[in-house]
Image (cartoon, rainbow, N blue to C red; front, side):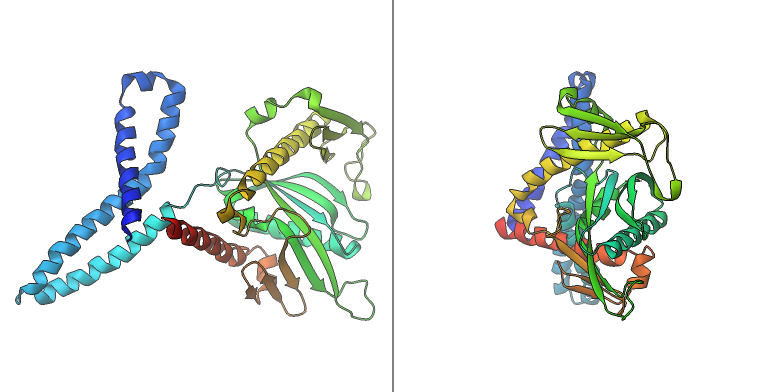
Length: 360
């Protein structure tokens, strides 16, 4: 391991010990906000500190065992021990590299997944429905809770757009690479001559903001309209104006919600999506300024981002960002999304670490 990395780990170790001492200081214990902040930092440093101590102990063992190689009687035993030590060294250094990855502040949050049909008319809407089912099945596998926030049905099936809230630990960290354009190539049911059509949908993954952030919004920045809700086949049709449309005047963001019969519930849901979208956009702008992150595969939910192509005739899914081709389309649509998520997560980490270690 490079000396520069070891020096950085030594700094983190000293900081860990420093924070540990500070947390026993009565003045800090009595200051709730400072105690909370330091406790959070202590927890963040704990894993890397523990791993670094194990690495140093392993390095000491390596040095003492290497000396024994000069002893004829102990040489064979020392060689076997050295193999174990070197294996541990590789494993511990890999763990340290992973622990040096920055924590995305949104990774542990729940999120909204917004799916919109783009080019392709009815077929794009049907595909939006397929993506919706895919995320529901993946959430079931992960034991996450799902809730439809708002949806606009298409006459031929599927959705013109749909927003779902997926709740659970680490949801956003898993799904953040889904943002962007999703393209489908298949023969639509309405195609009489068997021609393959290409249609697209966009997906935007938006971290859910805490309740206190929603309360901070200036009411004067909001334009709230009510209207009569409607649905497919008479579902959720009310005779009262329970549907809500909220416009954030400074940014122009608009969110509608009509899936609840209660105007109050629709307003609360729409406001949560709206504020989450605004905060997510602000975070994305900060992230774009970072050259490392900019190259690292995170989509924006815009049509111009081409994440994947789902080719039904060849049972093939292609992730264009990492040139990954898998012939498991049926399995992926049935919720085995980790087949795509894990490779791109690994690529994301590898890209960051490559840049990180090049700079130090």
